[in-house]
Amino acid sequence: MTLFLAGMVLFLGIHSISIVAPGWRRNQVARRGEGAWKGMYSIVAGVGLALLIVGYGMARREPVVLYTPPAALRHVALLVMLPVFPLLFAAYLPGRIRVAARHPFLLATKLWATAHLLANGTLVDVLLFGGFLVWAVADRISVRRRSAAEAHDAPTAPARAMNDAIAVVGGLAVYAVIVLWAHRWLIGVSPLA
Image 1: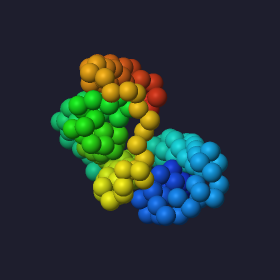
Image 2 (image 1 turned 60 degrees about the vertical axis):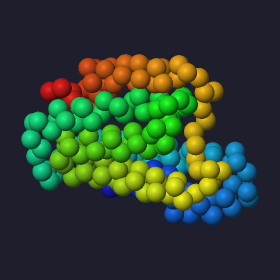
Image 3 (image 1 turned 90 degrees about the vertical axis):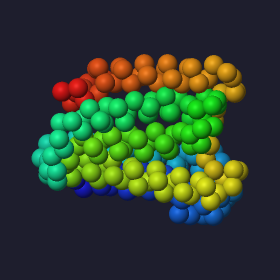
Image 4 (image 1 turned 180 degrees about the horizontal axis):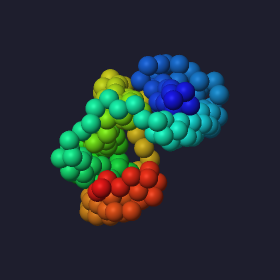
């Protein structure tokens, strides 16, 4: 659990700098340069992600069960997950979905975390998905308070009418691959089981 917690602190910590210390972040970028800041940011996030993944796998070997969700909630979780990948695509493909969702990446993160909290009740799951849910809510509140210049919008493709269709079709295709095959291969658990 120690590796997992260290990974969570590093990964969510570096992603929370814009939330808790935007002035410090601006000073670091000005002092070190955009490239150096992004390089350091990427290294810390990468190390955090690696520790999180390894620690999560280790913690799952001896799970501490906090609650046992009813089987029906797994079906609800599958429905809650349905818009997640189209929203992730829409974050990078400007169109009506992106405008309606305002911050589709954060909305996708909130839905992903909520779906997994509905279907999983171990301590490590609650810490992982609960942590990401709290982070996404805090970041969304923070984005509202920051100016457009300070908000961390992802680089996007040019606005085109087809972007919404690409986001929906591409997102649903990824969802199908993950539900039918990749989740079991990557995580060891089928969401359909």
